[in-house]
Length: 117
Image (cartoon, rainbow, N blue to C red):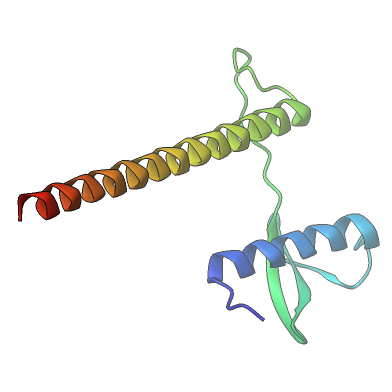
């Protein structure tokens, strides 16, 4: 199994906690209130039980905000994720282009050096 980064492991744990909320309802003894709007659930990961905190937050929304409902926030989040992915792909393409350019330049200099001798 590949080594997981802490960030990736935490992402998996959050997803599993969310799945537990959705699939099991967790209106039973698996969800524990730890403070005001903070709850915790134990999530199994590689045979180990790991606590994951779930925070319920009611955002402050001004009437002039474009996001007024949960669907609006979800749509905005999706758009932001798509923009990040596009930027990542563009950066990768630019990197590949630079590598190809540098390789061609090295080959050209190598040829010039060989011809000069």
